[in-house]
Length: 533
Image 1 (cartoon, rainbow, N blue to C red):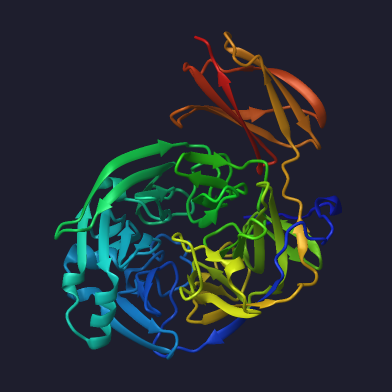
Image 2: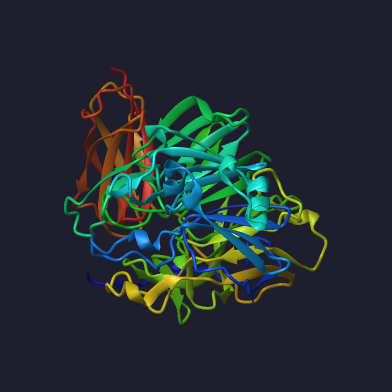
């Protein structure tokens, strides 16, 4: 695969004068905990300062050869308890559990959410001895966190602290599980069965969820159950996996989430760059803004300053299509491992900004890691830290554990996955009150715009006017209100500046038509058209 290194124009960068206020240095300090191996892509919960770690993998990034990808021998078959204060750990094998539970709980990229004392785990991907193949598990499992932690420490039986049910709706890996009010949200992800194959040979089947799956869970009795199941589909904006789901406090004080980046776009094997907000009222693509410096699942911390009404999100390493080199922002479409620590901020007016921080990860690490927040700090119910309620000048916001570390930025692309491994390191993450120097702000604005007319229309042909700051590729997708893509293609010959064309929307024989234009494989503009048919 060729590598494309493109130095973006200097006009892409803005001055380092911050338009947001985050007066802290980020300090990472390694913490040694004996008995804890390297892990990535695991699930976690915590109780009274102790962590519970389940599943994930013990090797590095998966091999490119189908017969070597995701070997069952590297499944994490132990559950760990970590007392970070005393730097101790305890473990127990999952092999004493019923087959359905033990197979799911050694999988990778499970969707998980801790709700009080219960950890809910959905899906995940791994080799299944029962299936004699790799599969995405179709299970919803609940874990009694406090009692399981106590049992692992005491070395007593653990079987009674799990419940599990199976349903095809839960066969998702690489998504995220969240909760707003009493409703759970299973966001994005995909179902992947069989062996990974980079050449798309028929060793697997893959179906993207393209959806937010909403439901309630009843964990009160001896049997686990779910109800009120609803699916919100969008094959354009929700076609995402392996992303970061950010708990948020929105400018009006509402709690919700934001999808940050993720992979892969429909027309090209590149990350999405724009975020999508999720609220109780629906989901809202924020195509006016692109986030460049963090594109895959990594550790992240979310902090809200109520005094200034600013929402800050920190991202630690991982993999990214963009990174800085000698002060220049570089685009590498192979999406390499990076050291970058970055921040996005939403202001009181809802505007979004991105910054590179002057500190970096110690090495090429962070992909598939988790940030475990310090629950002794004031925080909202969705784990967002209440920054303005902390008066100390320096304080620990949490810890980063695990992830993939690499000796080369391009180890996966170069088929040198042996240069990667699961990271055993824990980093204490501290904020120190200061005015950081050299905080580089990135211009994330979408410079492309589209106007469609007439709207509403009684015709299958509309007029589309483009405003393009430079000449580039233009792709389009026509979708319906229920999220199905009915047509996609390329548009040739559009020049820089203002231009127009007649556009046929007859492929969507519905009252509402959504046309999404993709410029330069990274800038999205969606327009809803009302057809009076």
